[in-house]
Image (tube, rainbow over all chains, first blue to last red; front, side, top):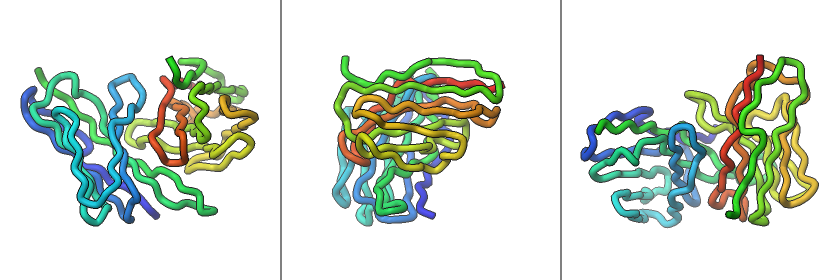
Amino acid sequence: GQQVMQIPQYQHVQEGEDFTTYCNSSTTLSNIQWYKQRPGGHPVFLIQLVKSGEVKKQKRLTFQFGEAKKNSSLHITATQTTDVGTYFCAGPVLGAGNNRKLIWGLGTSLAVNP
Amino acid sequence: IAGITQAPTSQILAAGRRMTLRCTQDMRHNAMYWYRQDLGLGLRLIHYSNTAGTTGKGEVPDGYSVSRANTDDFPLTLASAVPSQTSVYFCASSDQGTGELFFGEGSRLTVL
């Protein structure tokens, strides 16, 4: 079935190092969303990408949507301890009965050593 | 502050008991969702509602039921809890189906 794969599953970095997580879909997506979940917290929406090849930045975070709209990446420059958490990507697909639903990657958990 | 409220935040429950997790939103969003989150399995959709009066099944609906009598409330009921339903449950809403999701703080449920 339709699925979204995220790699890596875990990543440990030293504070100040860069970090990238990748999201690959088995199907073309109309858009892709990224969420961050702090330990013990709930997922919080970060951004949505819609256009093929789109690149968006939020301070040290850079989000990309692939040309084929099947993959995406989140890059964090010079990580800080506040970046700790799990990053999820999610994209809408058509489900049963033509209902659109979000399919989620399993997330990448980021640990930052101070 | 507008958002989603879930209750209870945490509950320990004996197997076989009935339990309802409450979810209320004040953003007037049409769509609401219930997810469960388990280590290594990510977020799995249990049930959803695209608008008041309608509900649909997600990936893992068995053992759960929902209702959507009005726009704001979307309770999730476990008719007869089993240990495999031990999880963290998140309620979420969106203004439109598959738009930005707003999540509640979560309800941690332990079934013994």
